[in-house]
Amino acid sequence: MAVERRKIWYSLIQVYREFAKESSVHGIKYTIQAKTTIERLLWLIVVIISLVCSGQLANQFYERHKSANRRTTVVTNQFPSLKLAIPAVTLCQGHLVSAERLRPFLTMQKRLYLPRGLTIDDFEQGLRYLREIVYPSNQYSDELEKLQRILNANRMSLPQLLEQISPNCTDLLVTCMYEGRNESCDELFVPILTTYGICCSFNKAVQRRWQTAFTRSFFESNTWHVNSSSFFHFHVSSEINGGKNSRYTPKVNRDLYSINFGSRYILSVLLKPYNTSDRIASITYGDGYKFLIHERYTRPGPNAVEFMAGEAYETVVGLYGTCLTSSPEVLSLSSSQRDCR
Image 1 (cartoon, rainbow, N blue to C red):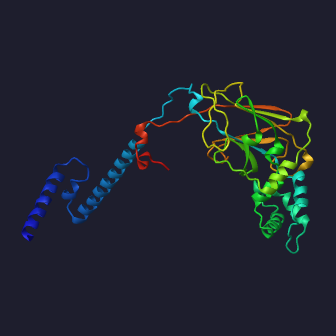
Image 2: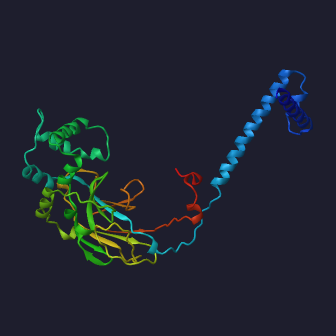
Image 3: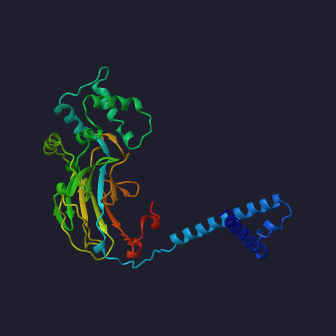
């Protein structure tokens, strides 16, 4: 066995010497032509490093080929809205804390339990700086810490507090129209918790109503008297052709589509103005409502279309939809081949 191994080893050496002698690859021939063993070893190391680098480059070219074997094609710029779902529309009033809501909260609720050393003034003072939960500046940490101590002592979370002292959807919306028909605003819009506080959202998937038994009775008994000449008027329209008509049905988590486009509005709402004296804590410095148009299966975030609707103005918003699809060949690829992250 040892003799056979030596013969095989000797044959391999001879084959390598003949290959190196006749090879035109730079460096390989010097592994047998060098005069000293050290020179041969150095040239051998150079050859090995070259082979490793060549293999790495070949692998990079292959990975680039795999990532570039797909392309994006614009099929048409006249895509029908039949296949484009209506997005969610979320509106947020500037107020985080309303004086009209705070007074009944302090009188109708059971007396707040105040930890030792804290007063009701500390509670109201902490409410004035609730803007920090949206735009933190870390300048009022002492006031907010006292507010948090009071909430902890009463086993109340911040969303529960906002639910009872923030303006609700009934306070904000006067009339609502969907697909040219008058609809109940309570059915179209539901309260949701966002980074801007508790807002009112239309067409949000998995909608959830936040009202407790207390706040439901309070919502029904509390109304505002406002001047109709100062109403806001806001429209959302779709700037795409085609589609199918679908009546809005609440509590059904399905995508909605519309045939309306251009000057015909999908959604139209009339909003109540609010008195600046009612403002205790606010996310805005001026008057108006913050609107966010976003994908209905996600919460409104940085990618949402965001704008302010001012008081005594009619605001019309048009959307241009984009539909991105993948061919069956792309969908059949594994996630590793598609390089999904």
